Amino acid sequence: MATILSAQVTQIVPRFCAKSPLGIFTALSRAMSIKVGDEIPSVDLYEETPANTVNLRDVSAGRKVLVFAVPGAFTPGCSKTHLPGYIKQAEELKSKGINEIICVAVNDPFVMNAWGENNKVSNKIRMLADTNAEFTKAIGLEQELAVLGGLRSKRYSMVVEDGKVTQLNVEPDGKGLTCSLAENMLAKL
Image (tube, rainbow, N blue to C red; front, side):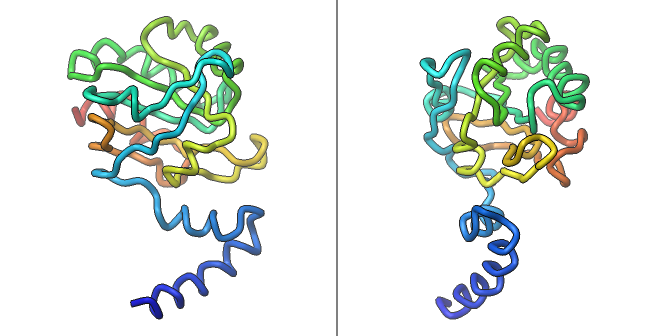
C-alpha cells in the first residue's frame, strides 16, 4: 500500500509542483476535497472587520447551516446571480430547516461587508471573509484565478449540520452557475 501511495504521489507532484507556487500542498488538496460526512474544519473567518472572528464549526454546532462560496465579491456572476438568488430564497430556505445562511469568499472583511450592504442582505445572509483562503484550502476547494488576483474559492454550496457536511454541490468548473444556486439547493432540502 505504501509503495502504491508513494508511486501516486511521485506521479502527481511533478505535474502540480511545476505549475503552482503552492507545490505539493496544492496537489494533495486537490486530491482531498471535503465530502459529505466530513467534519467542517475549525478555521476562523472574518465578519465586517478583522476583529470579528467567526468559526463555522462553532456556528454550526447543534444547527443546520447553509454555506455558499463565490470566487469573488462584486464579480458579475456572483453579484447578478449567485448572491441575489440566496437573498431572494432566504426565507424559503429557512422554512426548510436552515438556521443560518452564510456566504464565504476569499476577500477582506471590509469588501464582504460592503458587498453585503450593496446587495441589501440585512439579516438574511452573513457575509464572511476568508482573507488568506485558510478555510478554502482546508476544505480543498481552492482554485487559481489570475484574473481575480490569484487564489480564490471554487463556487459551491453545502449544508452543514452539527459540524458535519450533509450536502455538497461544487460547480464542475469551479466557476459556473448551476448546481450551487439557491433554487437548486432549495429543491434538495
